[in-house]
Length: 91
Image (cartoon, rainbow, N blue to C red; front, side, top):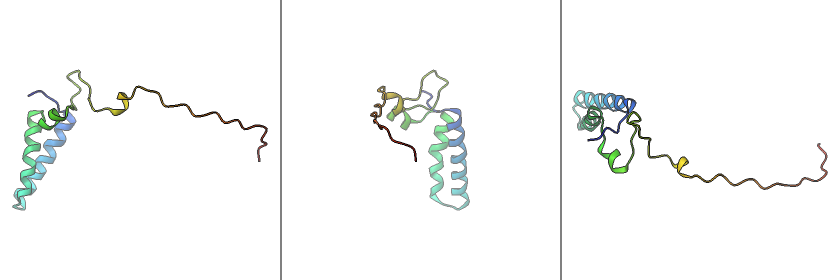
């Protein structure tokens, strides 16, 4: 699998996943199982969901994040209309 997770993303996934798994074991709850996908994707540095939706937080590979709606809009904003004020005196 292609790496698509940044170092920061990886650290967050590993930390949150480990905490969720530990709390699930401590409280004997199935909620701890939610930590497993986070640990797995953090360990592999690849997220299948990111691949499906086409994003990447890893900027070391030379690619840029593909989710940037601001840069997709290349048009400049419309200019504000000019308003003539005439000979108004300040208050």
